[in-house]
Structure formats: structure tokens, C-alpha cells
Length: 146
Ligand code: THU
Ligand code: ZN
Image (tube, rainbow, N blue to C red; front, side):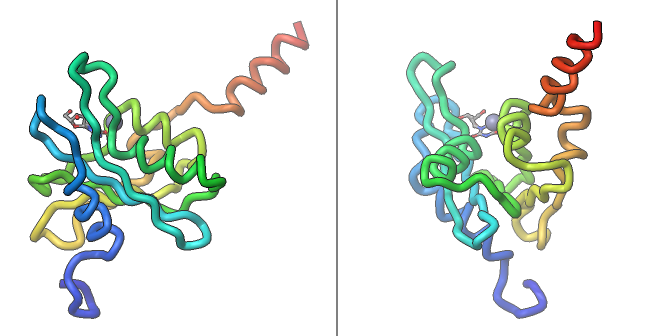
């Protein structure tokens, strides 16, 4: 219970709701994500697996794609859960995908079930020394100096 007595963090609840639509015939491991934009809109996503395995979409990238294609580029935080509520964190690929739009202080809430409120990491903790647009611009300037 949180201090309001209403149970789990609402963003984690939204991620849990997204689990229902996961398409996971291969791993049977459902993942849900809920991404909150700077204006408070929440976009959810679930994992969508594919028979060729490598085309599988991750819940976080589905949520991000929905938000960006709707015109959002400013994000406040993301919640991630699995059917097991096992504290799953975004994989390396999803960390990098989030880093395209979110800075190192961006909070990532991970659902640990009854262990409320779960764990919150910053994106910088999960993915230090990220390659970003700044990296490429700095390299371009360095090239220009040579
Ligand atoms: N999965 C996600 O959806 N997000 C992550 O970042 C971790 C992994 C999915 C991919 C696959 O469908 C299943 O979890 C098992 O790896
Ligand atoms: Zn991922």
C-alpha cells in the first residue's frame, strides 16, 4: 500500500493492465510498460513476439513508439512489469531506445509485486556513458578541428 492506501503506484498499475494484450506464444513471458509524458498522458505497451524471434517487439519500445508517433518527445518516467512482477528492468536495447529521448535522470520504475513500491532506477544508472546525439555532434566538431 502507498501512503494513500490505494495500493500500487498508478503508473505500475497501468503497466500491469498492458500485460493483458502481450503476444507471447514463444517465451510466455509477458511484459508491460507505461510511459508518462511531460503533459501527464500515459502510453502503454506490451511485448509482441514473432515466429522468427528476432522481430519481437519489447513493451517499452511499443509504448515509446505509440507516444512518439502521437507527437510526444518529452517524458517524465516509465513503469515496467512482467506477469511474474519480478522486478524486470528494460533490456539493453530498450535502455538505449529510451536514451534517445530521456536524459540520465529519467526514472524507471520496476514492479516487484508485493514489495511496494518496487525499485526505481535512473536511466543513467541502467545505461551509463550512453551514445547520444551529443556524442555524434562532439565527434563531428573534433573531426572539423583535424
Ligand atoms: N522483453 C520486453 O518486452 N522488454 C524488455 O526490455 C525485456 C524483454 C520481452 C521480449 C520477449 O518477448 C520476452 O520479454 C522475453 O525476453
Ligand atoms: Zn527491451
